[in-house]
Image (cartoon, rainbow, N blue to C red; front, side, top):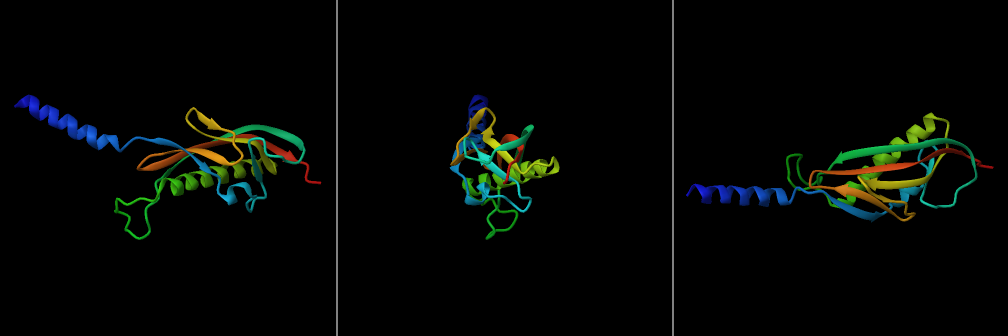
Length: 152
């Protein structure tokens, strides 16, 4: 009897934990990700064409983790969460905001050769980004060369 109880407990725990894993997704960049924001810093992903580099301030890496967005139609205690795409885009937006703020504070107006990654899975794509998403959060790292571009 004791053995049956242990097996039942293990089966329940395994079932509950099966939905807790993080998955890595590759998603298309939202249009606003490739536009300069109010700071004026533009991010060029992968091998995107960019103006000549006047000064390279070095590589910078920003990692963020955001809580999975809740569906507005439900209260904060609801178990209904938004889709993976929305969560990954929120994480990307936060990472780009932080990267741009760092660049601006160092006198830069661009970030070139930008890549996205989740742990060891990296992409230097000009059209897609890599994000890790779980039932509770989304995570991403964005890195690139912080530069002063020749805007003339």
